[in-house]
Length: 498
Image 1: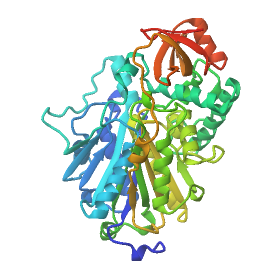
Image 2: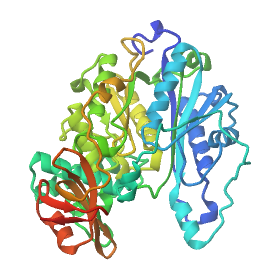
Image 3: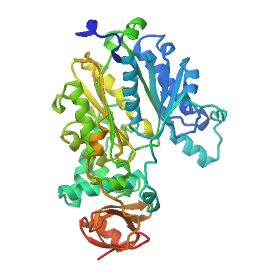
Image 4: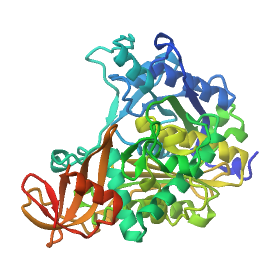
């Protein structure tokens, strides 16, 4: 028995089973639909716990929003396929933070005695969906009646983008995170070549972890040079990001984990060596819309929420043996690491990240939690931190985990007031005048550069969004430092250099 396990409060939350599934079907008709893939992962989680009756004990099934196929209550379908009889089903909105947000909620309810056993997870079969649509094939996936609905839906408080951002085309994550990348480069004073070398080296480190991860979608070794350079099979997407620097959503993956109380784990007969304890958690979000952030190179809510979770767990950043930083794009990793105080030369993932391990839209963090559980079981004295991110570095969730019992009861922080008090910028929705480049990205199609999307700052400090498809202007953004350069922006958002 783990040290201290006998004296634990029976309401202490504990993760007792994890499951991950990859599907590489060669025929469209043989591919499982998302809910069936998640049900298979649930069966894996039960086997992982060592207890045949684990799924029968689940009272809450919570599914992270599935995008490969629209279900009205996916948790109900998963429960039926995996022989669960929950009293409650939950579906989330979009956001990579939600697996951790759900874990934090499950821990709070279990600790308070409001619920007993949760299964949390998600699944995507985007590759099959895309192939079927291209071939005009009806896969016959489940369609639920119009009156079906989950017990509860966790919705975002507002759309993730401002209407003016939508109007100016600043919506696709592949463009927004590359804009963050330019802002970070300008702040650090790196040359374009130095910056690209840094990104390639960082992603090569992530790839090395994926190569050793049996659940990773891409386990082929990639050198830093191959990651950095645009080629026919690794084209430039949004400078400086080649395709492999973007989250890989063209995957067939499912992951889930089961969290319950120590009391129920004992009653079910789950061996203590399968237990991993959430020590603390936190949730917070930045100023909601990108336009209102003070700096496009910062995400202060990450640091605030991370420090709060670590403090509640009674550990410091240097006490962490393992971390998995949300890694949809390199800027997300670099900014989060800086906000948390993590060095970039230490391992920052246990999976290999969203590019290589796989980024199934909203559900990557279910995979990172499941993998972290496996890592911590193998090192009973180790402590791990998992981070989640939704939107455009918008929503953040943190979880501190360990196989050892927590030194204090699980606690949760929601330091939103501290974040809300931070400076914010106003958005100038209509501009006809002078400004300075803050950060931008050149978006590429298969034939080459198509359009630059640019954040600019007005003399009064307001931010505006602009763009240009002028070849010479786009070339400047990829060849020289443009941050701070004077520009003119007209009422339609067209940018010209002065």
